[in-house]
Image (cartoon, rainbow, N blue to C red; front, side):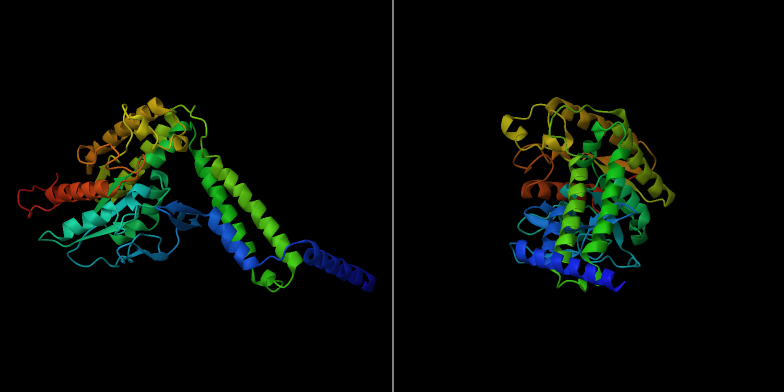
Length: 378
C-alpha cells in the first residue's frame, strides 16, 4: 500500500513538473472568464450581453449595467429584463404593458440607449389620464417558443393589462425545419452543457488545487472541449448555404407558439396585441439593401425569404381572428428602407422613433377612451 501511494505521488509530481516545465502558465480565473464569455454571449450594438440557462425557457440575460453616449444608464435587472425591477404587486391604477420579442424590441444601441418600447412608454406617460408602465421582456435570440414559456413561468406574475407580441425574424430561422423540436433539443442540450461547465468552472474542491498547473490545464482542456461541443450545437442552427426550403412543420411551430401565448392570456382575460415585426425584407430590395440582410441566419435565398415572411404574416392574421387578440402592422410608418433599418430587422433611431410613436398612438386610441378622439378597442 505504501508503495502504491508513493507511486501515485511520484506520478502526480511528474505530471505537475511536466506541466510547469513544458506548458505555459495558465491563470484559471482569467481563462474561464474569457472562454465562457465567448461561448455564452452575443453582441448587441457592439456590447457583449451575457446569458445563463434556465430549464423552463432555455435562457435569459444576466444582470448588467452600462452607460451610453448621452451619459444615461442602461440596466438589465436581476430577472434578465431590460430596465429596473418591476414593482410587485402592481401599483393601484397603473395600466401595465408587457412586451415580448427578440433583439429588435430589446435593441439599445442608440445614443440614448432607448428601445422602441422605451419610446412608446415615454409617449404614453406624457399623455394625461391613467398612468402607464411598460415592462420590456424582449430578449435577443428569443423566438415565440421562449417567450410563450417564459410568459407562463414568471411574466404573468407581473399582472399585465396588455401583452404586446413582436416576433418574426428569429422564428423564420425555424421555418426551414420540418421538426423544429430539433432546435428545442439543441437548446436543452446547451442548457445541460452549461450546468456541467458551471460545476467544473466554479468548484470549491477543485479550486483548492488552484496552485497545480497540471489540474488547471486539465480543467481548461475539459472546459474547452465541452464548450466546443456547445458551439457545434449552436452552429447546427446556422445555414451557411442558402438552399433551405420552407417546411410546414416550422410554420406550424410558429402558429402553435403564438396560439399558446393567446391561450395563456385568454385564460387570464388579458388582451394580446400581435405586432407584425417590421423587416427590411421586400420582394424588390435593392442590392445595397440585400447586402444588409443576414440570409445565412435563416438559410433562405431572397425569394424564399420573402415567401416565408408572407406565410408568417398569414399566421399573424389567423391569430388575430381569435377573441381578445388584436393585430397592428407598423410598415406604413416604419418603411422598409435603409433610413429606418440598420439590417434585416434592427432599427436605426428614425425607425425606433417611428415605431415607438406608432405603438403609443395605437394603444392610446384603443385602450384609453379618455384620450381625445379615441375609442376603446373591442
